[in-house]
Image (tube, rainbow, N blue to C red; front, side):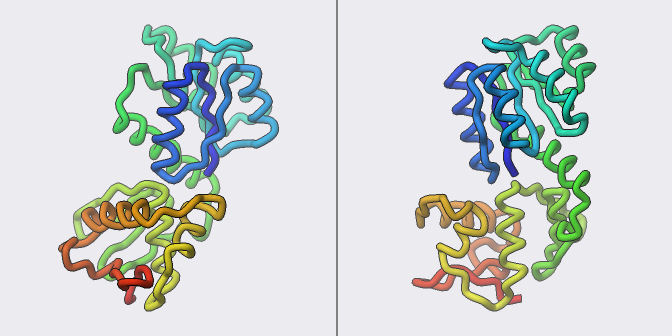
Length: 227
């Protein structure tokens, strides 16, 4: 999924991009309101993170222009403006959410995942039906998995990883195959990056992460789900 990040502060913009890319999104960046409108028209992103106080055109003005073209694309205002009237105005203009600076990573991740669930629900993709990995049921459109009464929150990339393994039971997936499917063909692979993601995912989905049953390591070759 592609996300347009419109933010004039370089530090904040880079921070948002880092959070989004870690979750598995492709970030498109704009440094002012005018560029944000142009990129929206060119790229038609899946959702938008929009600062309010920007040169060229304010986030409010950008929101109005976007809503005149697309009334449904999800949009989050991210701003240092924290007065209640600012939030109300943003929501009345058609924003789906409002995050106040300074913000925490966990807060941004939670709100982005909520917006993603909304996007996936709108698309009503048949491929988003749940699937099983052993005793774990994965719900891609919810970015969640369940085992009995336990609910496990997932990132977009973790959902892609589990989907890839579920579609290739018994097959050893090498690193390039996994990177191309879950990071994109333009991503420069790093063994450490993949191993860290798999380790983190195992801690959340495996009953015993030290003896994994869902994602198994095949030394020198890659990873495998036995099915």
